[in-house]
Amino acid sequence: MRAFALSLLLAASLKGCVAYEYEHEFWLRVDGSGTVNVTGRPALWGAFKGLGDPRDPAAHATREQARALFERSGLSVRRVTLTERQGQPYLFVSADFDDVNKLGGTPAFPDLTIGLRREGEHLVLEGDWVRPGATGDPGPEHHEGLMAVRFHLPSRVYAHKNAFEGVERGNITSWRQGVASALGGGKLEFGATLDSRSILGTTATLFAVTIGLGVSILAFFLWWAWRKGRREAAAGRGV
Image 1: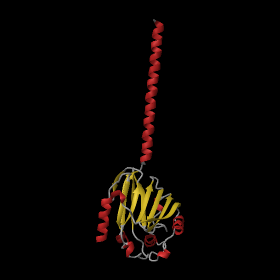
Image 2: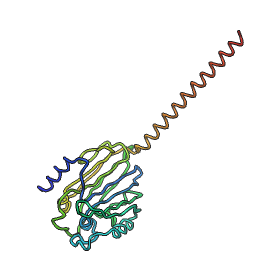
Image 3: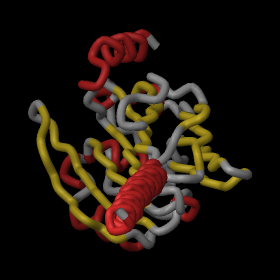
Image 4: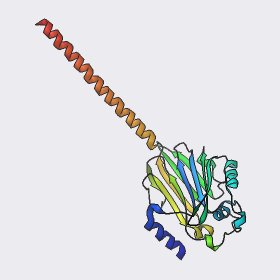
């Protein structure tokens, strides 16, 4: 508990500079499709997704295993990399999906429940993250730091379920907890209510309307000037 409190204090002081030990990051569209990036220590991939052995460094999750896991779950894999941060390895996967409602409970997302539904003019996003059952503990050296589920939402956000920093710049909402809490079975609940019209679509519509209005006004003045010129020419011939 003390380690978790210190982690949250550090996160609050760093704001947007937080580095997570395990993270799901979604770019969501209003039709339910999008892209997800999953980043984490290989040992935590084992503890949270059952990929590899979290207790044996020689049997940690590999890039090939991660790619196969996501493809088996129906996602189109963009990129899989293994990087280092402060001497620690991190496995990263980026993949596209057609329907966010189909992700939860798949082999790639045994730790995630997620749904997006329409309610009138709004979309309601809700779900939770929790460590699945029969996975081993990676050891105390992997209990430090934070994990998170984050969303880049496509439209105006009307409400959210206790997002850590509310609606951040870029229409981002984040939920986080300590890795130790997550390994102990802590559930991370998330949710938001947003507009069913995307910001991009609304902006494009307003831009088109503005251009159309401008063209109409210009056409009116050209027509008015032409009519005025004809009347003046006719008056001159009459004189």
